[in-house]
Image (tube, rainbow, N blue to C red; front, side, top):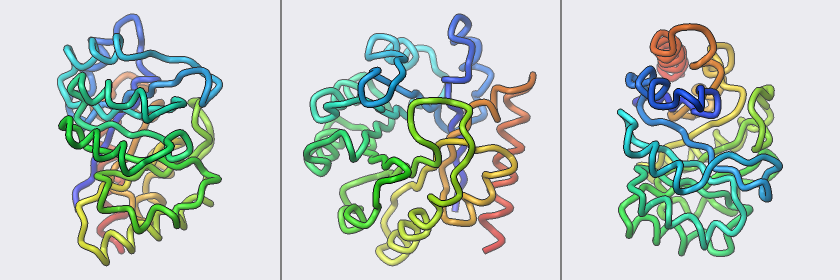
Length: 222
């Protein structure tokens, strides 16, 4: 199983964003958190900014929509050329129809669940998605502590992916560091969003390599 490290640009320097994107060129995708100050109590950027990031990023975009009315707004991010667009299960009225729409535009379709949202209703829908994002903190704020109580969801997803043989990436986002990434990898995650663990310190590329090695060690040990 391959390990993917997707740095979150929420931890980047917004004034020097192009430079900070180039500093993570060794990562797999760049995680772009879109927040609308409605679904979550925080505001980041919309399609205009994401389009510019798409223009200059050396690696593909992994867009995470923490926004209300995902059915209406998510397709616009796929149309920008984002490699992957993830919307929240709690913010979509018809997740399957939306995922199919994203795929038809050409993006990978992802669905995200908050820590308190059960994964069981979505297990039978896995063929409709390319990625499932298990939030390991409450969405909307950086710098929160990793929630190990979300790991049973990952184990359930991992078992279902193994049983069906589907190509579904299992992503975690929130509190991921060199100390916690192994816990998530051991539970079945293969795609890891990290913000301060990548951009903290002076060498994002070294931090990416460290996280990748830690995840691979845990992946191969079970």
